[in-house]
Length: 266
Image (cartoon, rainbow, N blue to C red; front, side):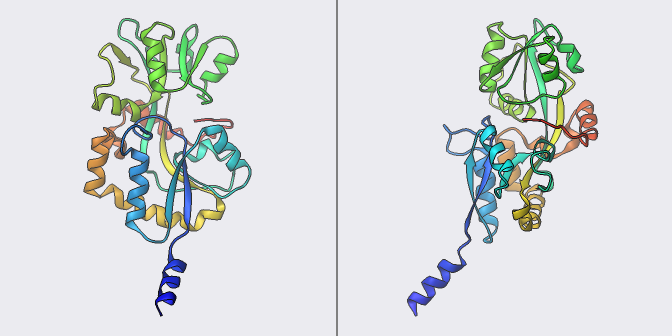
């Protein structure tokens, strides 16, 4: 009888499923800390239900691209469908987890007042290696903008402070984390207009589409969960739950988000 009970428990245990995150920036990925936003999200999901056990896998974007293109089943956290749809037209997207934007950072003594990519002509910029930035990559390829690839936002900041780049781009979520923890120096200027604004979701391959209702219920629950909002406040990103906290320019960018980005590497 005992053996039958143990066998039944083993049979009913959910099979672990990988969920990928390729965002190697705070607050999504902080390996030196006991917890970060990605690990907290996965832990909350696993504690909330017993149907699926997620295992977080931090991965570089080129490796993730290969998985998506190979037609393997996948779950991707913190992504927007426009960034992957051209690789897998059948993927599904959950409700938005929160809003975000890419913003341009420069120095107060030489502010870059960004409104559109053409404002960067003649400048040297810092941008994450392997990431596509709409309108900017084209100017770089045309020789009108000099791009320095960086491994992290901290690397970009270091190049800015040394005068090796005039501006760099980073996610607003990471900027909010910097501001919350006084990582951001006082001598920096944040451009009012974003480079891009977007929503972050869980992306699912067609093989995993049956999990979409479960993810959507969880995401909607988190929006009303006081403990989760305290965690977001701890990392400085609680305001990204509410689109009305975005600047007008960022809201306008969200309105134009329906345009597909053919080779985006966000």
